[in-house]
Amino acid sequence: MKHIRGLKIGIFIALLLLLGVTMDNRGPVMDVQAYPGSEASSYEQIKTFSQAISIVQQNYVEEPDDEEMIRGAIQGMLRSLDPHSSFMDPDMYKEMQIDTAGEFQGVGITIGIRDGILTVIAPIDDTPAFRAGIQAGDKIVRIESEPTKEMSLMEAVKLMRGPKGTDVTITVVRKGSSEPIELTITRDVIPLISTKVKDIDDAVGYIRVTQFQKDTKEEFESALKKIREEKGDALKGLVIDLRNNPGGLLMSAIDIANKFVDSGVIVSTKGRLKNQNYAYKADSKVSDPEIPIVILVNGGSASASEIVAGALQDHKKAIIMGTTTFGKGSVQTIYRLNDGSGMRVTTAKYYTPSGRSIQNTGIEPDIIVVNRGSGPSGPIREKDLSGRLDNEQIDEDEGEKPDSPDLLPHMDVIPENPDEDDQLMRAIDLLKGLDLFRAQSASETAGTTE
Image 1 (tube, rainbow, N blue to C red):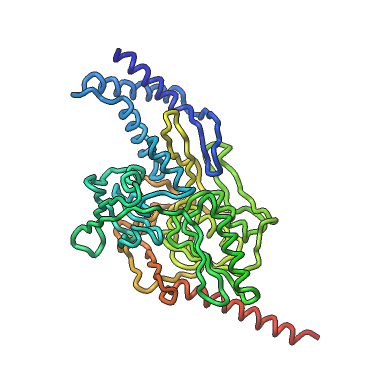
Image 2: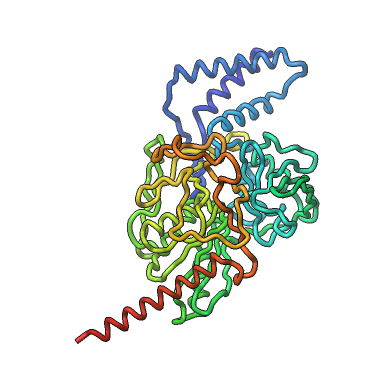
Protein backbone atom coordinates (compact mmCIF):
# COMPACT_ATOMS: atom_id res chain seq x y z
CA MET A 1 0.00 0.00 0.00
CA LYS A 2 2.81 2.39 0.89
CA HIS A 3 4.51 1.53 -2.39
CA ILE A 4 1.35 2.42 -4.34
CA ARG A 5 0.95 5.65 -2.41
CA GLY A 6 4.58 6.57 -3.11
CA LEU A 7 4.07 5.80 -6.81
CA LYS A 8 1.03 8.07 -6.91
CA ILE A 9 3.01 10.87 -5.28
CA GLY A 10 5.83 10.38 -7.77
CA ILE A 11 3.40 10.66 -10.68
CA PHE A 12 1.84 13.73 -9.09
CA ILE A 13 5.25 15.38 -8.75
CA ALA A 14 6.08 14.72 -12.39
CA LEU A 15 2.82 16.24 -13.54
CA LEU A 16 3.27 19.17 -11.18
CA LEU A 17 6.64 20.00 -12.72
CA LEU A 18 5.33 19.85 -16.27
CA LEU A 19 1.77 21.19 -16.20
CA GLY A 20 0.01 24.28 -14.91
CA VAL A 21 -3.09 26.42 -15.37
CA THR A 22 -1.91 30.00 -15.63
CA MET A 23 -3.35 33.36 -14.66
CA ASP A 24 -1.46 36.48 -15.65
CA ASN A 25 -1.95 40.06 -14.48
CA ARG A 26 -4.66 40.69 -17.07
CA GLY A 27 -6.97 37.89 -15.91
CA PRO A 28 -7.35 34.12 -16.06
CA VAL A 29 -5.69 32.31 -18.92
CA MET A 30 -6.93 28.72 -18.89
CA ASP A 31 -4.08 27.09 -20.75
CA VAL A 32 -2.12 23.97 -19.98
CA GLN A 33 1.51 24.55 -20.83
CA ALA A 34 4.52 22.25 -21.21
CA TYR A 35 7.90 23.71 -20.42
CA PRO A 36 11.19 22.84 -22.15
CA GLY A 37 14.04 21.29 -20.23
CA SER A 38 16.21 18.24 -19.95
CA GLU A 39 13.80 15.32 -19.59
CA ALA A 40 16.53 12.93 -18.52
CA SER A 41 17.84 15.29 -15.86
CA SER A 42 14.33 16.05 -14.57
CA TYR A 43 13.48 12.36 -14.44
CA GLU A 44 16.57 11.57 -12.36
CA GLN A 45 15.77 14.37 -9.92
CA ILE A 46 12.16 13.20 -9.62
CA LYS A 47 13.42 9.68 -8.86
CA THR A 48 15.60 11.09 -6.08
CA PHE A 49 12.71 13.12 -4.72
CA SER A 50 10.38 10.12 -4.79
CA GLN A 51 13.02 8.09 -2.99
CA ALA A 52 13.28 10.73 -0.27
CA ILE A 53 9.52 10.78 0.20
CA SER A 54 9.42 6.98 0.35
CA ILE A 55 12.10 6.94 3.06
CA VAL A 56 10.13 9.46 5.14
CA GLN A 57 6.87 7.56 4.65
CA GLN A 58 8.38 4.27 5.76
CA ASN A 59 10.69 5.42 8.54
CA TYR A 60 9.44 8.66 10.11
CA VAL A 61 8.53 8.27 13.77
CA GLU A 62 4.90 9.20 13.08
CA GLU A 63 2.83 8.65 9.96
CA PRO A 64 3.37 11.78 7.85
CA ASP A 65 0.67 13.74 6.06
CA ASP A 66 1.25 13.27 2.33
CA GLU A 67 -0.46 16.54 1.41
CA GLU A 68 1.61 18.53 3.88
CA MET A 69 4.81 16.90 2.63
CA ILE A 70 4.06 17.71 -0.99
CA ARG A 71 3.10 21.29 -0.22
CA GLY A 72 6.18 21.71 1.93
CA ALA A 73 8.34 20.36 -0.89
CA ILE A 74 6.81 22.77 -3.41
CA GLN A 75 7.28 25.61 -0.97
CA GLY A 76 10.94 24.72 -0.47
CA MET A 77 11.48 24.42 -4.21
CA LEU A 78 10.12 27.90 -4.87
CA ARG A 79 12.05 29.42 -1.98
CA SER A 80 15.25 28.20 -3.62
CA LEU A 81 14.56 30.34 -6.72
CA ASP A 82 14.21 34.01 -5.74
CA PRO A 83 12.47 36.11 -3.05
CA HIS A 84 9.34 36.68 -5.15
CA SER A 85 8.54 33.07 -6.09
CA SER A 86 6.31 31.41 -3.51
CA PHE A 87 3.71 28.73 -2.85
CA MET A 88 0.16 29.52 -1.77
CA ASP A 89 -2.13 26.97 -0.17
CA PRO A 90 -5.82 27.31 -1.16
CA ASP A 91 -6.52 29.87 1.58
CA MET A 92 -3.46 31.91 0.68
CA TYR A 93 -4.38 31.77 -3.02
CA LYS A 94 -7.78 33.26 -2.22
CA GLU A 95 -6.10 35.95 -0.12
CA MET A 96 -3.80 36.81 -3.02
CA GLN A 97 -6.78 37.35 -5.32
CA ILE A 98 -8.23 39.81 -2.81
CA ASP A 99 -5.08 41.93 -2.93
CA THR A 100 -5.86 43.42 -6.33
CA ALA A 101 -9.62 43.95 -6.08
CA GLY A 102 -12.36 44.78 -3.60
CA GLU A 103 -11.43 44.91 0.07
CA PHE A 104 -10.13 42.69 2.82
CA GLN A 105 -10.18 42.53 6.60
CA GLY A 106 -6.89 42.82 8.39
CA VAL A 107 -4.37 45.36 9.72
CA GLY A 108 -3.26 47.14 6.51
CA ILE A 109 0.43 46.52 6.05
CA THR A 110 2.83 45.84 3.18
CA ILE A 111 5.57 43.37 4.11
CA GLY A 112 8.67 41.75 2.64
CA ILE A 113 11.40 39.36 3.74
CA ARG A 114 14.98 40.49 4.37
CA ASP A 115 17.62 38.01 5.48
CA GLY A 116 14.89 35.59 6.50
CA ILE A 117 13.16 38.21 8.67
CA LEU A 118 9.66 39.49 8.01
CA THR A 119 10.03 43.25 7.57
CA VAL A 120 7.63 46.13 7.02
CA ILE A 121 7.90 47.88 3.66
CA ALA A 122 5.17 50.37 4.59
CA PRO A 123 1.86 50.57 6.44
CA ILE A 124 -1.12 51.41 4.24
CA ASP A 125 -2.46 54.91 4.92
CA ASP A 126 -5.38 55.31 7.33
CA THR A 127 -5.40 51.66 8.45
CA PRO A 128 -5.12 50.05 11.92
CA ALA A 129 -1.40 49.32 11.35
CA PHE A 130 -0.78 52.93 10.33
CA ARG A 131 -2.65 54.28 13.37
CA ALA A 132 -0.90 51.83 15.71
CA GLY A 133 2.47 53.28 14.73
CA ILE A 134 3.88 50.51 12.55
CA GLN A 135 6.81 51.98 10.62
CA ALA A 136 8.70 51.14 7.44
CA GLY A 137 11.75 49.07 8.38
CA ASP A 138 10.16 47.45 11.46
CA LYS A 139 11.17 43.79 11.73
CA ILE A 140 8.24 41.58 12.68
CA VAL A 141 9.65 38.84 14.90
CA ARG A 142 6.38 37.38 16.17
CA ILE A 143 2.72 37.29 15.17
CA GLU A 144 0.64 36.22 18.15
CA SER A 145 2.61 33.24 19.51
CA GLU A 146 4.22 32.34 16.18
CA PRO A 147 7.88 33.27 15.55
CA THR A 148 8.30 34.62 12.02
CA LYS A 149 11.75 33.15 11.34
CA GLU A 150 11.51 31.19 8.07
CA MET A 151 7.84 32.20 7.75
CA SER A 152 6.71 32.91 4.19
CA LEU A 153 5.00 36.13 3.20
CA MET A 154 1.72 34.33 2.55
CA GLU A 155 1.83 32.58 5.92
CA ALA A 156 2.33 35.95 7.60
CA VAL A 157 -0.53 37.51 5.61
CA LYS A 158 -2.82 34.65 6.61
CA LEU A 159 -2.02 35.19 10.30
CA MET A 160 -2.50 38.96 10.20
CA ARG A 161 -5.76 38.98 8.27
CA GLY A 162 -8.98 38.16 10.06
CA PRO A 163 -12.50 39.37 10.86
CA LYS A 164 -13.13 43.03 11.60
CA GLY A 165 -13.05 43.80 15.32
CA THR A 166 -10.68 40.99 16.27
CA ASP A 167 -7.20 41.66 17.65
CA VAL A 168 -3.80 40.47 16.52
CA THR A 169 -0.61 41.05 18.48
CA ILE A 170 2.52 41.80 16.50
CA THR A 171 5.99 42.06 18.03
CA VAL A 172 8.49 44.21 16.14
CA VAL A 173 12.14 45.11 16.52
CA ARG A 174 12.81 48.72 15.57
CA LYS A 175 16.10 50.49 15.03
CA GLY A 176 16.71 52.82 17.95
CA SER A 177 14.61 50.78 20.40
CA SER A 178 16.48 48.64 22.93
CA GLU A 179 13.56 46.26 23.48
CA PRO A 180 11.06 44.57 21.14
CA ILE A 181 7.81 46.50 20.75
CA GLU A 182 4.57 44.59 21.19
CA LEU A 183 1.57 46.09 19.40
CA THR A 184 -2.00 44.81 19.66
CA ILE A 185 -3.91 45.91 16.57
CA THR A 186 -7.65 45.66 16.04
CA ARG A 187 -8.42 44.42 12.54
CA ASP A 188 -10.74 46.41 10.32
CA VAL A 189 -12.05 46.46 6.77
CA ILE A 190 -9.22 47.67 4.55
CA PRO A 191 -10.73 49.27 1.43
CA LEU A 192 -8.51 48.91 -1.57
CA ILE A 193 -8.83 52.48 -2.83
CA SER A 194 -5.67 53.01 -4.77
CA THR A 195 -5.88 56.68 -5.79
CA LYS A 196 -6.21 59.72 -3.58
CA VAL A 197 -6.57 63.41 -4.43
CA LYS A 198 -5.42 66.16 -2.09
CA ASP A 199 -5.84 69.92 -2.56
CA ILE A 200 -2.34 71.18 -1.82
CA ASP A 201 -2.03 74.24 -4.08
CA ASP A 202 -4.19 76.49 -6.24
CA ALA A 203 -2.06 75.90 -9.34
CA VAL A 204 -0.73 72.35 -8.90
CA GLY A 205 -2.75 69.14 -8.79
CA TYR A 206 -1.81 66.21 -6.56
CA ILE A 207 -2.67 62.53 -7.05
CA ARG A 208 -1.29 59.78 -4.85
CA VAL A 209 -1.39 56.20 -6.13
CA THR A 210 -0.92 53.80 -3.21
CA GLN A 211 -0.91 50.60 -5.30
CA PHE A 212 -1.88 49.44 -8.78
CA GLN A 213 -5.16 47.52 -8.77
CA LYS A 214 -7.93 46.52 -11.13
CA ASP A 215 -9.76 49.84 -10.74
CA THR A 216 -6.74 52.17 -10.56
CA LYS A 217 -7.14 53.40 -14.14
CA GLU A 218 -10.73 54.54 -13.56
CA GLU A 219 -9.87 56.03 -10.16
CA PHE A 220 -6.92 57.94 -11.64
CA GLU A 221 -8.96 59.28 -14.55
CA SER A 222 -11.67 60.48 -12.14
CA ALA A 223 -9.03 62.14 -9.96
CA LEU A 224 -7.46 63.93 -12.93
CA LYS A 225 -10.87 65.05 -14.18
CA LYS A 226 -11.71 66.45 -10.73
CA ILE A 227 -8.43 68.40 -10.62
CA ARG A 228 -9.00 69.88 -14.08
CA GLU A 229 -12.57 70.91 -13.23
CA GLU A 230 -11.59 72.53 -9.93
CA LYS A 231 -8.46 74.35 -11.10
CA GLY A 232 -9.35 75.07 -14.71
CA ASP A 233 -6.92 77.37 -16.52
CA ALA A 234 -5.02 77.95 -13.27
CA LEU A 235 -3.59 74.39 -13.41
CA LYS A 236 0.16 74.64 -13.98
CA GLY A 237 1.25 71.05 -13.36
CA LEU A 238 0.61 67.72 -11.67
CA VAL A 239 2.36 65.84 -8.88
CA ILE A 240 1.96 62.05 -9.03
CA ASP A 241 3.02 60.60 -5.68
CA LEU A 242 4.26 56.99 -5.92
CA ARG A 243 6.17 56.99 -2.64
CA ASN A 244 5.80 53.74 -0.67
CA ASN A 245 3.72 52.27 -3.52
CA PRO A 246 4.73 48.56 -3.57
CA GLY A 247 3.39 47.90 -7.09
CA GLY A 248 0.52 45.70 -8.23
CA LEU A 249 -0.95 44.84 -11.62
CA LEU A 250 1.22 45.30 -14.68
CA MET A 251 -1.62 46.39 -16.97
CA SER A 252 -2.79 48.96 -14.45
CA ALA A 253 0.67 50.55 -14.40
CA ILE A 254 0.75 50.56 -18.21
CA ASP A 255 -2.65 52.27 -18.30
CA ILE A 256 -1.44 55.07 -16.01
CA ALA A 257 1.79 55.58 -17.96
CA ASN A 258 -0.21 55.61 -21.21
CA LYS A 259 -2.14 58.66 -19.94
CA PHE A 260 1.01 60.71 -20.51
CA VAL A 261 3.09 58.72 -23.01
CA ASP A 262 1.56 59.04 -26.49
CA SER A 263 3.89 56.86 -28.56
CA GLY A 264 6.56 54.19 -28.31
CA VAL A 265 7.24 51.47 -25.74
CA ILE A 266 6.03 51.86 -22.16
CA VAL A 267 7.67 48.72 -20.79
CA SER A 268 9.04 45.49 -22.19
CA THR A 269 9.45 42.05 -20.64
CA LYS A 270 12.01 39.36 -21.36
CA GLY A 271 12.06 35.76 -20.17
CA ARG A 272 13.19 32.29 -21.21
CA LEU A 273 10.13 31.63 -23.37
CA LYS A 274 9.14 33.55 -26.49
CA ASN A 275 5.69 34.38 -25.14
CA GLN A 276 7.35 36.14 -22.18
CA ASN A 277 9.15 38.56 -24.51
CA TYR A 278 6.79 41.43 -25.21
CA ALA A 279 6.84 45.20 -25.66
CA TYR A 280 3.80 47.11 -24.39
CA LYS A 281 3.31 50.21 -26.54
CA ALA A 282 1.44 53.43 -25.94
CA ASP A 283 -1.95 54.13 -27.50
CA SER A 284 -2.08 57.79 -28.54
CA LYS A 285 -5.90 57.75 -28.41
CA VAL A 286 -5.92 57.62 -24.61
CA SER A 287 -2.94 59.90 -23.94
CA ASP A 288 -2.85 63.34 -22.35
CA PRO A 289 0.83 64.20 -22.72
CA GLU A 290 0.88 67.99 -22.39
CA ILE A 291 0.56 68.57 -18.64
CA PRO A 292 3.90 69.12 -16.80
CA ILE A 293 4.48 66.34 -14.24
CA VAL A 294 6.68 65.61 -11.26
CA ILE A 295 6.67 62.03 -9.97
CA LEU A 296 7.65 61.53 -6.33
CA VAL A 297 9.39 58.24 -5.46
CA ASN A 298 11.36 56.70 -2.61
CA GLY A 299 12.78 53.37 -1.48
CA GLY A 300 9.28 52.00 -0.97
CA SER A 301 8.32 52.61 -4.62
CA ALA A 302 8.55 49.19 -6.26
CA SER A 303 7.68 47.15 -9.34
CA ALA A 304 4.66 48.73 -11.08
CA SER A 305 5.62 52.11 -9.55
CA GLU A 306 9.03 51.81 -11.12
CA ILE A 307 7.46 50.93 -14.48
CA VAL A 308 5.46 54.18 -14.46
CA ALA A 309 8.39 56.29 -13.25
CA GLY A 310 10.81 54.68 -15.70
CA ALA A 311 8.46 55.10 -18.67
CA LEU A 312 7.79 58.79 -18.04
CA GLN A 313 11.46 59.42 -17.28
CA ASP A 314 12.69 57.77 -20.49
CA HIS A 315 10.06 59.54 -22.62
CA LYS A 316 10.87 62.92 -20.98
CA LYS A 317 7.25 63.28 -19.85
CA ALA A 318 8.00 63.81 -16.16
CA ILE A 319 10.71 64.83 -13.74
CA ILE A 320 11.40 62.12 -11.16
CA MET A 321 12.07 63.50 -7.68
CA GLY A 322 12.81 61.91 -4.30
CA THR A 323 15.14 59.00 -3.50
CA THR A 324 16.14 55.82 -5.36
CA THR A 325 13.35 53.28 -5.77
CA PHE A 326 13.19 49.68 -4.54
CA GLY A 327 14.65 47.98 -7.62
CA LYS A 328 12.23 45.12 -8.30
CA GLY A 329 12.54 44.49 -12.01
CA SER A 330 10.94 41.05 -12.27
CA VAL A 331 7.58 39.71 -13.46
CA GLN A 332 5.59 37.15 -11.48
CA THR A 333 2.98 34.88 -13.06
CA ILE A 334 0.34 33.16 -10.91
CA TYR A 335 -0.29 29.48 -11.59
CA ARG A 336 -3.34 27.79 -10.10
CA LEU A 337 -2.89 24.13 -9.17
CA ASN A 338 -5.57 21.44 -9.23
CA ASP A 339 -6.24 21.46 -5.49
CA GLY A 340 -6.96 25.21 -5.39
CA SER A 341 -3.46 26.13 -4.26
CA GLY A 342 -1.20 28.30 -6.37
CA MET A 343 2.34 29.27 -7.20
CA ARG A 344 3.79 32.70 -7.81
CA VAL A 345 6.70 32.17 -10.19
CA THR A 346 9.13 34.75 -11.53
CA THR A 347 8.91 34.37 -15.31
CA ALA A 348 10.52 37.49 -16.82
CA LYS A 349 12.22 40.82 -16.16
CA TYR A 350 10.96 44.35 -16.77
CA TYR A 351 12.81 46.85 -18.93
CA THR A 352 12.14 50.57 -19.31
CA PRO A 353 11.53 52.06 -22.80
CA SER A 354 15.26 52.74 -23.25
CA GLY A 355 16.06 49.12 -22.39
CA ARG A 356 17.20 49.69 -18.81
CA SER A 357 16.79 46.89 -16.31
CA ILE A 358 15.83 48.23 -12.88
CA GLN A 359 16.60 44.93 -11.14
CA ASN A 360 18.62 45.71 -7.97
CA THR A 361 19.28 49.28 -9.15
CA GLY A 362 15.87 50.95 -9.14
CA ILE A 363 14.99 54.27 -10.74
CA GLU A 364 17.41 57.06 -9.94
CA PRO A 365 15.57 60.37 -9.46
CA ASP A 366 16.39 63.30 -11.73
CA ILE A 367 16.43 65.43 -8.59
CA ILE A 368 17.31 63.86 -5.24
CA VAL A 369 15.35 65.28 -2.31
CA VAL A 370 15.33 63.81 1.21
CA ASN A 371 12.69 64.91 3.68
CA ARG A 372 13.73 66.48 6.97
CA GLY A 373 13.92 63.94 9.76
CA SER A 374 14.60 61.08 7.36
CA GLY A 375 17.63 58.94 7.89
CA PRO A 376 19.21 55.63 6.91
CA SER A 377 16.55 53.53 8.62
CA GLY A 378 17.47 50.32 6.85
CA PRO A 379 14.73 50.16 4.22
CA ILE A 380 14.29 46.94 2.32
CA ARG A 381 15.47 47.15 -1.25
CA GLU A 382 15.67 44.43 -3.85
CA LYS A 383 19.47 44.30 -3.80
CA ASP A 384 19.38 43.48 -0.07
CA LEU A 385 17.19 40.38 -0.46
CA SER A 386 18.78 36.96 -0.26
CA GLY A 387 18.56 34.99 -3.49
CA ARG A 388 17.47 37.96 -5.62
CA LEU A 389 18.02 37.88 -9.37
CA ASP A 390 21.09 39.58 -10.79
CA ASN A 391 21.00 42.52 -13.16
CA GLU A 392 22.80 41.38 -16.32
CA GLN A 393 23.51 45.01 -17.29
CA ILE A 394 25.79 45.76 -14.35
CA ASP A 395 28.76 44.14 -12.65
CA GLU A 396 27.36 43.52 -9.19
CA ASP A 397 30.69 42.28 -7.84
CA GLU A 398 32.15 45.77 -7.98
CA GLY A 399 31.66 48.54 -5.48
CA GLU A 400 30.64 48.64 -1.85
CA LYS A 401 28.06 46.12 -0.69
CA PRO A 402 25.16 47.44 1.45
CA ASP A 403 25.75 44.97 4.26
CA SER A 404 24.57 47.26 7.06
CA PRO A 405 21.63 49.65 7.47
CA ASP A 406 24.01 52.64 7.50
CA LEU A 407 24.96 51.93 3.89
CA LEU A 408 21.39 51.76 2.62
CA PRO A 409 19.61 54.62 0.81
CA HIS A 410 17.31 56.86 2.79
CA MET A 411 13.67 55.85 3.20
CA ASP A 412 11.85 59.15 3.21
CA VAL A 413 9.23 59.70 5.86
CA ILE A 414 6.07 61.19 4.35
CA PRO A 415 4.74 63.88 6.72
CA GLU A 416 0.99 64.19 7.19
CA ASN A 417 1.21 67.98 6.89
CA PRO A 418 2.03 68.94 3.25
CA ASP A 419 3.88 72.06 4.45
CA GLU A 420 6.38 69.78 6.23
CA ASP A 421 6.82 67.52 3.20
CA ASP A 422 10.04 68.82 1.63
CA GLN A 423 9.76 66.56 -1.41
CA LEU A 424 6.22 67.70 -2.15
CA MET A 425 7.03 71.38 -1.62
CA ARG A 426 10.05 71.11 -3.94
CA ALA A 427 7.84 69.48 -6.58
CA ILE A 428 5.31 72.32 -6.39
CA ASP A 429 8.03 74.97 -6.58
CA LEU A 430 9.58 73.22 -9.57
CA LEU A 431 6.31 73.07 -11.51
CA LYS A 432 5.56 76.70 -10.79
CA GLY A 433 9.10 77.65 -11.80
CA LEU A 434 8.79 75.78 -15.08
CA ASP A 435 5.52 77.56 -15.83
CA LEU A 436 7.07 80.95 -15.02
CA PHE A 437 10.07 80.21 -17.22
CA ARG A 438 7.81 79.24 -20.15
CA ALA A 439 5.73 82.36 -19.72
CA GLN A 440 8.83 84.59 -19.69
CA SER A 441 10.29 82.81 -22.74
CA ALA A 442 7.02 83.24 -24.64
CA SER A 443 6.92 86.93 -23.72
CA GLU A 444 10.48 87.53 -24.88
CA THR A 445 9.84 85.67 -28.13
CA ALA A 446 6.71 87.73 -28.80
CA GLY A 447 8.62 90.96 -28.07
CA THR A 448 11.32 90.24 -30.68
CA THR A 449 8.96 89.22 -33.48
CA GLU A 450 8.92 91.73 -36.39
